[in-house]
Image (tube, rainbow, N blue to C red; front, side, top):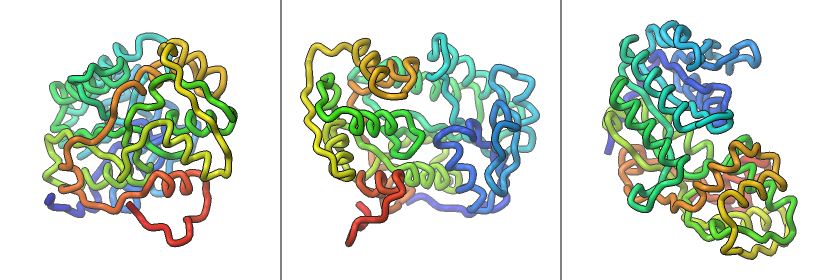
Amino acid sequence: MGTREKMAGMEILVTGAGGFVGAALAPELVARGHAVRAGTRDPGRRPAPAGAVAQRFDLDDEASLGPALDGVELAYYLVHSMAQKGEFARRDLHHARAFGRAARAAGVDRVVYLSGLGDEREGLSEHLASRRAVEDALASTGPELTVLRAAIVLGRGGASFEMLVQLVRRLPVMLCPRWVETASQPIALADTVGYLGDAAETEATRGQRLEIGGPEVLSYREMMLRFARLEGRRRVIVSVPLFTPGLSSHWIGLVTDVPAAVARPLAEGLRNRVVVSNGAARRLMPRDLATFEEACRVALGLPAAPGGGSG
């Protein structure tokens, strides 16, 4: 089991602090007693979480990286370009290398990166393959690296979760691609943030590439039906084998608010089985994990189910 070290006062930079995971992680780290810099392209657009300091951080302006990283002991890398136009994989690789070099030059002790689950032997989608390439780029150019690989993170603002919510709410009958049958191990946003926080305080995670997931393995179909039941909706889901990733992304774009640039790589990634195959994270950072329903209730602001417990 890993040794948890409560290192209050550690100077931490959270990149992508305005994003889905980063916005939840920054206040968690502040609550743990760390000095947190909330790094975003435009700090003036939104205030930093209480107790954190807003920090300009723009990977397209490498001059901003040195000041953001100066004096930082640990940095979280939570940046990806999927929602931006252009070749997101090429951009992500370029950004990771620039960040790694800047972090090493600044004397950062360690970087923690949130990546994606998936078995490389099964052939990863471009989106998931890009996440692995970023892992390797950070490892080769930057300080010591800890990687946490996750599947769908369940929380409002997460593209995969919002896609699920909107499909269920808007379509009583769904003709879906085959990926609705693919196995996934979704994880609550709070548990993702908890693992990220624990990784910083657990020495044994140094140099590790760890897999994190919730207590249940579910298909996308099962997740949609469970979410429908939670909201008291009846839904019929029929999988259609001829749905290509391109058609899937157009379909998602028509039915949901997920931008097409995000829908395409998400749809392609959903064909990959994303399930934890190594229990090292649970051994090093033991924690009670929220079930799918519990995570959805928190995301929607619903009260806990009577007699509900954690998975």
